[in-house]
Amino acid sequence: MMTDMKLWTLLAVAAVGVLSLADYHQWRSTYGELTASIREVGLAGRVAGLDHELRRQASPARATIRAAWLLLATELDRSWLEPLTAEERTDEARLGIQRLELASQLAAEGLAAQPVSWRAAAVLGSSRYLLAQRRRDRERPAAAWREPLLAAMRLAPGHPEPPRLFVSASLSAWSRLAPSERDATLPVLARAFADRHSFGLLIPAWVRIAPSLGRLLEPIPDRPWAWDRLGQELLALGDRERFCIARRRWYESTAAELPAWVTHATARLRGDRGRAADTYRAILAQPPDVALAGSVAAALATLPPELIDDRMRRDLHGWLRWALDLCVAGFCPFAAETMRTIGERLGDLEGGEAAMAALLANDPDRARLHESLGAPGGDERWDRYLVLKARWLLDGGRAAEARDALDRVAADRRDDPLYWLEAERLARQLGDRQALAAAEGRLTQHARTAWPAGQWRYRNGVYRLELLASRAATGIRIEPTWAPAEGSVFELRLDGRERALLTVEPGAAVRWRLPVTAGLHLLELFDALGRRATAGAVSLEPAPPPPPPGG
Image 1 (cartoon, rainbow, N blue to C red):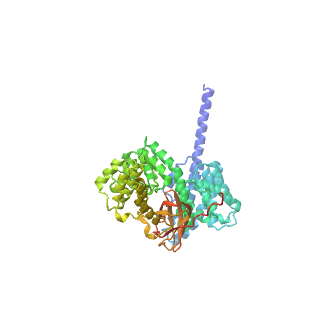
Image 2 (image 1 turned 45 degrees about the horizontal axis):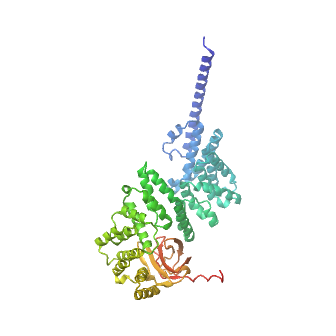
Image 3 (image 1 turned 90 degrees about the horizontal axis):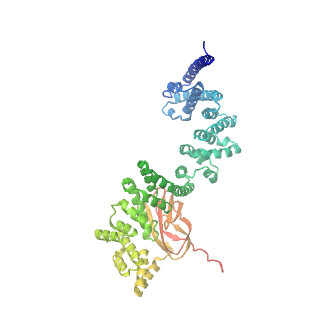
């Protein structure tokens, strides 16, 4: 006799079989209806492997939702229309309305069967929006499409697709949204922008819609890639003023993020050295800047020599040349240990550049070796090395050797404030009154408030001017010798530490407001847009007012 347990087991198995058979017939029916509907609106010819895609779904509800998603996707990206004739496009426009109607219907059915499906809610909201847009239905309330999309975001709080669809529709309908609806969109905009792919898709519309600078910047994630892309979009609109703001924010964001890159690169050395090399490469590829120099120095301290490739070597050489110009002017951005590491990592330095790098690494023996190999003379880099060497020797109280170094500077390159500053120090150490008077006289001639265009030195796209200010000033004025009709942007640096981005217009002076002390400064300038605007005469703005009595 069959036990109760066995009986219940057989009944359960039979019930499952009946339910499975019922599910199978329901699935067959749903699949048949779906494929018939899809053929009517022309989707089968647009999606490769559509039959397989629907058959692989685990349930009729999931197949319905997947079909709705594919219908919507076909209407969101309509690049496939480009090669069609005008008549074919007209037919596809009619079918497009039908596809959206079917997508909306299927999404509603799928959402009823699976209320927790964010994809069904997203398709429902997006298809409703696109239908209203293509039908030019201005009467349909925005809530009809906004509410399903907001529901999709609640159902999938970490997925980038729902906020991307919501923001895309909201920006397209911005002029028709109520003020409260616009305000409610801003937090979603920030959420969508946090995803880099969504940011790239949505930022072109946002820069054209944002009602103010504050609103424009509010949802932008503080990431270098976001500020860089924002700057590109602003330039496409010809908005150079706002481009300057985006570029400044890029520098700030990069300076804040770069230490984490160094940490990641170092950690990856213990596992994926290929990815570590990619991160080191990205660090060295940043433009030379004092705000980024600390992270570059930290990266070099852990970068294995065997990982350095030609691209890294080229970028590192750019950092070295930038540092040498600052160091010669007395504003060195790197410590001696970092300069030593740079020299070792590059390895193939020659001439005055190699000698300067060795001396700044506090390696005078190696600097002398380069001197013996390079025969200083006739080259600007060697002359700058000799001035730098004189300074290094004077710092150590070795005046006689410093005099020998200065005597070897080419006569036609001694008309330079850097040379005479060291000559003055030398005369003081030697107690040579006549030489001191001569050096002070030449420095008085060099100390001024204006410099002609010919004083600039130009190399590798950057203008450099060593200026000896005779007094303090409230800013610097630059007269471009040429600027394109559409204007450009100057990026300026003073002593490697102060930075500005200023728009350039044909025939108009550029004014940089910042406190300038009396004494030696290094002014650097380049066209940030690559439009070849050229630097011209430079002058100091008026001196700051005297302090109040007793102040």
